[in-house]
Amino acid sequence: MVFSKKFQFVIPFFLFMLHLHASTAQNIGGYWFAGSGFPASSINSTLFTHLFFAFADINVTTYRVTISSSNSVPLSSFTQTVQQKNPSVKTLLSIGGGASNPSIFSAMASQPSSRKSFIDSAIQLARSNNLHGIDVDWEYPSTPSDMQNFGQLVTELRTSVVIEARDSGKSALLLSAAVFRSSNYYSLNFPAKAMNDSFDFLNLMTYDFHGPNWFPNRTAPPAALYFQTNSGAYQVGGDQGISSWIAAGVSPRKIALGIPYYGYAWRLRNASNNGLYAPANGSAFGGDGSMGYNQIRAFVSQNGARCVYNSTVVTDYCSSGTTWIGYDDVQSVTAKVNYCKSRGLFGHFVWHVGADNNWALSQTAYNTWKM
Ligand SMILES: *[C@@H]1O[C@H](CO)[C@@H](O)[C@H](O)[C@H]1NC(C)=O
Ligand SMILES: *[C@@H]1O[C@H](CO)[C@@H](O)[C@H](O)[C@H]1NC(C)=O
Ligand SMILES: *[C@@H]1O[C@H](CO)[C@@H](O)[C@H](O)[C@H]1NC(C)=O
Ligand SMILES: *[C@@H]1O[C@H](CO)[C@@H](O)[C@H](O)[C@H]1NC(C)=O
Ligand SMILES: *[C@@H]1O[C@H](CO)[C@@H](O)[C@H](O)[C@H]1NC(C)=O
Ligand SMILES: *[C@@H]1O[C@H](CO)[C@@H](O)[C@H](O)[C@H]1NC(C)=O
Ligand SMILES: *[C@@H]1O[C@H](CO)[C@@H](O)[C@H](O)[C@H]1NC(C)=O
Image (cartoon, rainbow, N blue to C red; front, side, top):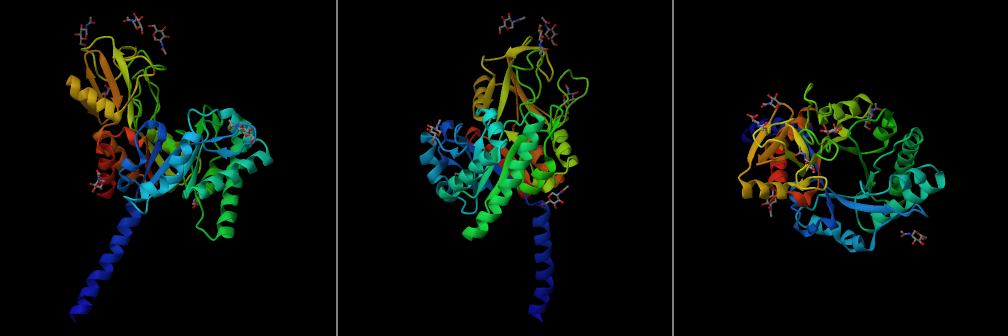
């Protein structure tokens, strides 16, 4: 009697928990690169489901995926290192990235033989270093034939990964790509159908919308979720990018929103006029004005900067004197993770884990998706 009563309670409760889990499960990706100076052994991998090793390169002559001599030792120990704190975290080898030459991708993708070199060597490099997947970071396919060849490449990559898993008896490598914020790259459509069918998930680089070097005359949010019409800023936002990929045929369950762990600093023209879209004169500190989240928090505490969260567009910003910094803090990250949950997305990812400040943002994201 006691037992059956217990079971009556336990079984529905268990099913309820399963359902709850299935409907809210979120994935948290984080990119790491050796040059960040942040040791992989210091990553709190409990806070992530996927960690990306950035970056492997493509040899311009052979089109094979290679690892530089400085990255080869960190790569060989990456999975073992990050699994110490979280044995179930998945690791992926990212190939390319923003600093790699897109014309090498373009040439590689244009011929069956070079695509095969790329695919076979990528699988081999990931397997021989015990990674769980491959992440393609071509920034960006930018001609109609690039787009077509990209579709061909990802279809062949999926086929090879399936065959390799069958032949090796191992579970298939995960396949992801870091892609432009929108399914449309300056009026060229990505091969969304092939991408949806071939990739396990897509990391949408929903950031770098504004920065002082390409938008110098006004402050603006670097990675807002929404845009404000009549603000004088570009009409781009993360939500718009997500919607464009879904409209192009990518399942929401395969889309991750990108959250930057960095911001951009502008020089205000008038220290008292320090809101969003205020008159500015380029970068505050020279260079491109980018600052890691940990550097921004140090700036805030050293200068007693005034910080504001704007929930209309979803951004944080702070200012002190004529320095104005747009970035994502705890409030923006919370709102963005809740957004990912409400749209039923795969999850989100961050660039890059080493720029967090004592895990403040990662812990916030983790707690928000668990709620
Ligand atoms: C890592 O995150 C987990 C989960 O929130 C937490 O329990 C743990 O204390 C964190 N470890 C460090 C070193 O921050
Ligand atoms: C590319 O591969 C060729 C042939 O193996 C090799 O000679 C060359 O050094 C490689 N290039 C780089 C930059 O590693
Ligand atoms: C910024 O303002 C300067 C002059 O004040 C102008 O020459 C320039 O075109 C503006 N830049 C942009 C991107 O609007
Ligand atoms: C995208 O992929 C998912 C999962 O593989 C599939 O269920 C869905 O039908 C695909 N969407 C389109 C538009 O093909
Ligand atoms: C600076 O901005 C404040 C607040 O908007 C305004 O009252 C003041 O007149 C401005 N100063 C100059 C020199 O434009
Ligand atoms: C804007 O900044 C440039 C240098 O970055 C400087 O030469 C120029 O005088 C500044 N303009 C104003 C109005 O402060
Ligand atoms: C966000 O900033 C815009 C532009 O200044 C403003 O119109 C809006 O009211 C702000 N939202 C909040 C919640 O303060």
